[in-house]
Length: 342
Image (tube, rainbow, N blue to C red; front, side, top):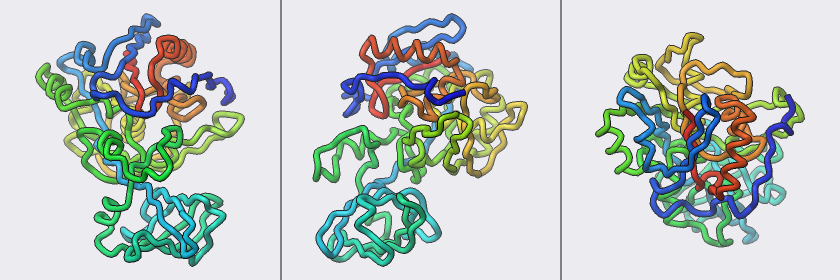
């Protein structure tokens, strides 16, 4: 199976640069796998497609303000993206740009009081950086960090902190900090939508998977099976595992919830509670064990997320759904519209 089979052409103007004014007013394409049909609706109509005994599984990971901008002693600007802690709360694996301008021992200042030091080079793109904040590290991030938007969302140069992005690149139910990218299918939920679902008897269970930078990366290998996923940490509580194992039908919100459930399940689909990490790569041919329906955004061509959706609904059906979405001028990617796969 070649990666080129999962490309599609997207007009650049359909890449959403800002979120829908109201979270739950984004558009929703409903894809019926059995009928092979598509229906264009709105996200606030989601409750119509769920039944009383359905269980909605959401990812409650909270996006940290992982994007930073500091200066070298020369005055040159260095941009950073935090990836994951490597020990203490102040030592992180980090992407740097431009990486050619730094070396081990380089110091980067943020305000004359807080600074960081380059400790080790891991690869061409990744470095170990130790931060020396004037106050606690969380306070430092809140002050100097900005929303880690994906590279296809453009912002004016020099606009470091955008209040709208800090609020909207975050789900309303985000709780456990640790993601450097949003679980974007959850961005459509409003408090009103959640209340409506509870009122109709739809139960909701929470898992945690901290989304890593790898979620943005395309598959660069010629053959799908040569691609390697980066590890991400997850947690499933005993309460959530019990709910899922009792549920008549599980509706997973986003690819992160899917990968959590499939990683935590045994061959019979029973969910085991606990903490762990996963580099599970789901592509066509995979047999799903724990997920019955999926809510997801529209994903980049030839990305692991696009292949996951193709695995769930079938490559031909998803390609046709995407063609329909482009024809109907749906908005794509993180701040875009969504798809409900029945």
